[in-house]
Image: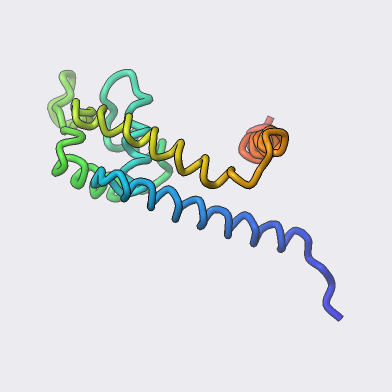
Length: 149
């Protein structure tokens, strides 16, 4: 007889949900024909949170990826006119990344795609269940920070 593994079941459910969320968000992005991958979408959203254009190393750190991965993402976004590389005014050896007007417009479309994907994902839940889920997700997301305190 096998012993039930509740943590293993929860882990599997979380992984399945993550894959489902990714698939649905990707579909909503593709339906809007923005020419942006989910990874590029994440970089654009991250870039929008900076007050001034960041360095690629800043983006890599914030995204928790290697700098080479950011270079590839920026190359694709730059080719699509959504970002541009600009020289750092204080250090000519440093390149910064800034959103273009087209990149800002794409961000607005991305927000709409994310909202419609979230509506699809959350459709089976009642308003009360959504509130409970929100509290639980906050606890899981912030739990690591709370443990370090």
